[in-house]
Image (cartoon, one colour):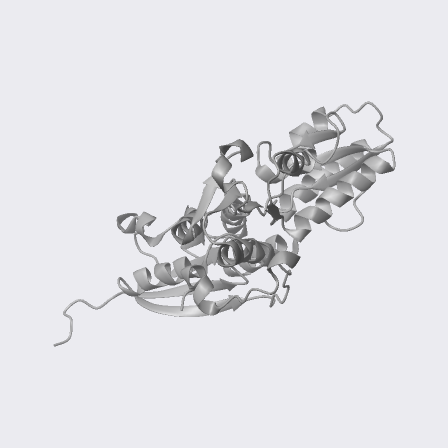
Length: 335
């Protein structure tokens, strides 16, 4: 018998690219492969990526997350410890060596590129200006590549206005990889106005995945009654997507970690919903949210694709002979 209540029509504009970037995918693979190669436990310093679902999935497989290396017990010193995708200060691997720990570095290659750009500036006698968010693990890692006092952090245009360097003619900048392209352009423009000899890095610091996800959201957001971004509240690139959606024309934009966080009673009359996911958010949660809409609306999914990403970063040499199967990654990618 047909239901007496017809579901309201709804269109979901599903952004592509979305979700895992190559650096996040590689970092998660490193933990999974280390567990296969060396057995549990495998220790991970800090969240491997900013996503609780991913962290809990890895914990279920035998990973143990610690804040600092001194938390690893004596009896497990032979087990590997993995450094997160955000990168770490030079002092961390030095500490691992001093403690005789076996470590696997899962720093995203694009973050490592920023580290090298900053070191090159310093090697050429420039003071480094880092555009980024204070306290973010990536910023801590980048600043920790250079001696104390050789990097200045600038977060906003106001910071750029207030910045007083010792040598205005000898500055080089780099940026956090997960920033808003538009916001960062404004900060760089202001710094260049004030310091005409400011030297750019050899290549753009904001990573391709951040740029691609923001462009896809810009294309999909106009006319959306609601734009949902799947991601964690401590995920910089996910929060930027929420801001980009609002600027591009979405009436409302929200960051959600799971379908259960959606307040359905507050959605009012919606007809078009945009949906994307930050670079640390697994596809299984995107699927979960689409299914939650299907249960409540007569849902049509439109693909809002911009570019296809084909990047693939190799895992550490020690792990390349270990087979990684779809079943190994099903906890984040789905079946």
